[in-house]
Amino acid sequence: MQILSRRPIVAGNWKMNGNKSLVSLLEDKLAHEDLSHLDVVICPPFPYLGLFGDTVSLGAQNMSMHDSGAHTGEVSASMLQETGCSYVILGHSERRADHAETNEIVALKVEKALAAGLTPILCVGETEEIRDGGNLFAFLAEQIDAVEQQIGILQFAHIVLAYEPIWAIGTGKTASPEQAQEVHQFLREHLAKKNSDIATKINILYGGSVKGSNAKELFSQQDVDGGLIGGASLNPEDFLSICLAAKQ
Ligand code: 13P
Image 1: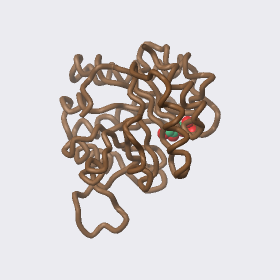
Image 2 (image 1 turned 90 degrees about the horizontal axis):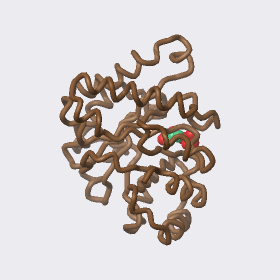
Image 3 (image 1 turned 60 degrees about the vertical axis):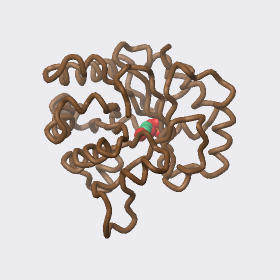
Image 4 (image 1 turned 30 degrees about the vertical axis):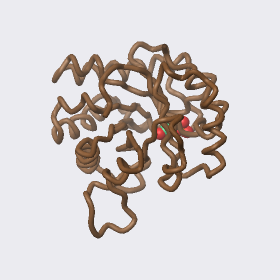
């Protein structure tokens, strides 16, 4: 399970993309580089999880809020753990929007993931309307607080946060480094009201149109500890350059 260290993390979220040959292409690309300064995580669709060797850490893109039972099509936290996952993305905006995952459901999933020894990558982020309406920080605080109320602040020692503004996902419209820093700092300060040690040490990743060309500037911000990468994680060359841009 994740131990707080602020060691950079670059996680590739393939979403419902990729194929078997991308697994080997990506592994070949990463195998020859010294990436020991960061944790490289790949979150492919479920069927490809078992195909990866130990070049990268593995994460799932979702999991069930139930332990087992009559839930056709669902995958449990312990199954992911047995399959070699160390991480699981939870609360991604696409799950919240397409599968009606509320803050409460996300909080229950985070609790289940932790119980199975997985590190949740807890995603938060606002729409353009929320930002433009001046409700950005209240909205993000609500997303975080729902989880905090379920698991308690101390469990945040085993969580990675990801700030993914919805308006920047898959749009090519990246948050500026200053916009990312402002929110990451807010998230840290918000957690610090409950526990300053955890707030100082928690990893906060930025996600939303990160590319090889903008990663270095984003990752150089004080409170940005790496990235959650969608589209660019499907291109081994681009993904490698993002990994290399992570802070030493
Ligand atoms: P893009 O990098 O394609 O904008 O996606 C970001 C994302 O949603 C990662 O989880």
